Length: 339
Image (cartoon, rainbow, N blue to C red; front, side):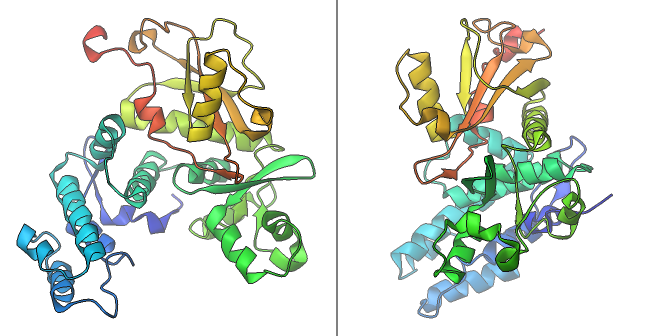
């Protein structure tokens, strides 16, 4: 079995008999090593002592007095979030249970980075045993923003952080940063994934250095559908079938899920019979149709009708997929109604 996404920290968790991941002290130590929680050079003694004590015992209780003793307001906020998050992870039956609760009830003031890291871990668990690099590359959309561009008529997605870093390194380039990265003489490491180079993903899955040809390669579009299916089955125990479509031809469509804020805005406009904007079609990155294998799990208002999924890019041409929408936004029937 091939390894991938070591940076997710999945090796620092324990897989329970029910298939979910259980948090461990080692996982908490990995969080403590994050830059946001490392005491800066000008940190007070109380913050340094707190950090050192938690490295020695990641599960030690942290009191309000411990937090209040920190001189810096940002440090107090960071440690308040971290300790509450730690306690929630350790008390939960699984990381998956924590994520579902956050998706359905709201994450509140939890920093987005924590939700993304949780998604990364859970996806690694859900995709255990996956041998398709296209699926793994598509899954990166769930926890990393993507920069979109059109190259040779095809919509391409590349990791937004990598693009930004390369853009700063090549500030004198006059073309768009992603297009420039596709020039082999300057950015040979940013390969567009195809059948000839897909195998190289295994050696660089944590580098986020492969471009996804979402517009020009059917395997990339199908891969995104497979990830969505695995995500829903793993978190909700519901079997669905997802397929890419060119447009919504159903005049009696009953439900949609926006996979990001822009997709939600476009979907709401269409639902209400309004014009979503002149550039709405250009902003849509993926349009998919989802059907449930067992209609008993579906809200009676939807029945056996499909659910449409809309993924779009923002005005800055960045795709920010929100996987929690696939948990909170589906038209599921109340559990009591499922025999």
